[in-house]
Image (cartoon, rainbow, N blue to C red; front, side, top):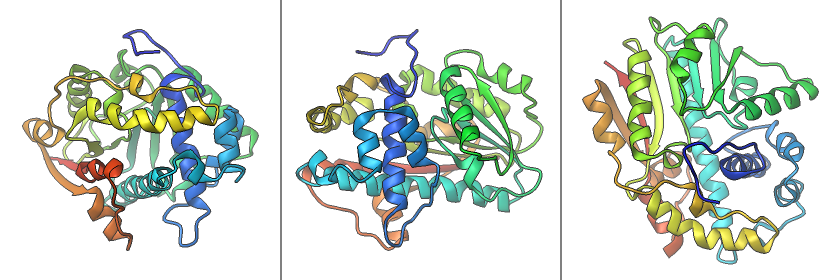
Length: 301
């Protein structure tokens, strides 16, 4: 089903399914030799959502090669491991620089509030759809997990007045903040992407930091690549057309838009991040375009 301005979801439908998919990839990546990440909550959260194909994936009952005969599924797991490590390092580096307030936008099944070694006095805000926040909070509580920072959840759709809800939860816009927008932008209409960064900027004191991603080919290019992947997942019982979830249309380049708002921007290509961790970026027609994706960090001047 295609997106609409008033659509909603849980972790087993629409955009929420992709959050579960990414968590499944993190679970698999965490079990590798010389793993880049360690997310002990990913697998139990995936099992709790209950999407059969992802449960089998984290339990080792599906050969990753079966998802994609040319190895793309393996590549996507590697990409998610590197992406996760990028955002982990971003938050830890921000904390080392003295930032004690963090906001995770569209937090999904992100467990950083529970697994990162946050300094004392850090407050982490997670923003997502109410049903997503409720599910994750109850599931992790049932596992006996406790946040490693002061966690404040903000149950609101990013299309609503989330800045007001964030402030109502105690957010202090006079203090520097570390913001993450991970795997989010392509699920927003182009104008909503601009509003997101406008709102972040308005809430960001000097010294605030931001981490996100930029895909030069936009939602349309990602949709084209996702069609083949969706067919492979469908053969395993997951009826999800990922191409329907992205918003196409011309959008402002993040690397150009943020400087106009007063941010100092740095970027790394996907192959550069792979190389940072001693890994070769794969070759092949389907994954070649992924090499154009940029991991973006910015500091509010």
